[in-house]
Length: 305
Image (cartoon, rainbow, N blue to C red; front, side, top):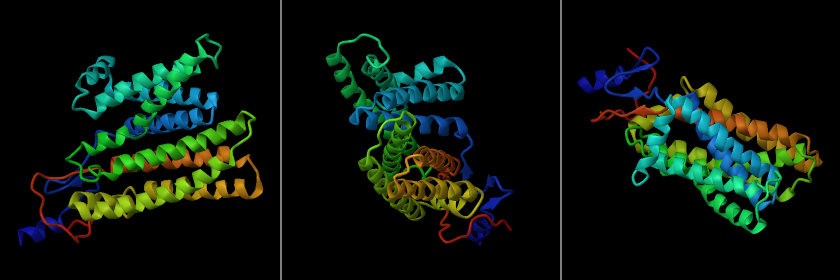
């Protein structure tokens, strides 16, 4: 009887979770912004490096060095908190990420120095670029390990979280590279467009797998998936998927089919909007599990009695 009562009163009042289930309230817009800028900035730099597109590399550095850093500082409130976070790199993915950001921005700046007419030996610039790519790669997925380290939030505690981050970062890097090439008057690469379409399909499959896997792993993760797909966050989440995957796919198809490059910047905007709100919704859907969870499998969340 107590189990029955507990399950029937699982959610109440829109925001309050009973019997120990609490929706996290700490991470929202600023952290979502930091995650987004770090992912796409790293992805943009990596794709631009391999295509020898210096403008894209420069923009990638600015997205991380200015955008992501500013969002983190605004969230933490005081710069000294940001510095203190560095010293736990042996155990903390947050510390490792901060160190990767510093190394990436420093080495990346040396790589693009000749492009902005700052003298540096070309051999040294190229070597710094190779090293910067390594740290850019870390930036593309490390936030996924930051989320996975939150053991009290089962939705995030998934081996798929870093994979999602990495693949979405790569897609964002491709979309922004193509958009910047168009805006800069350069020739776009069809290979990148086809790769982007392939990644759209892969990302859609990964997202479905992530949702299905979450429903099966833990009750709190199952509740979070319900919030994302049928409850309070469904409008944001579904719109992000439709715009980010559907809209980008349609525009990329138009570009390839009609050779109309003008749509590529619009496709990059769709992808960026979709990515941001997708991961924002995943952040907001994080539900802390109680220390001792009751067996709530199969109960329909969102109905209080």
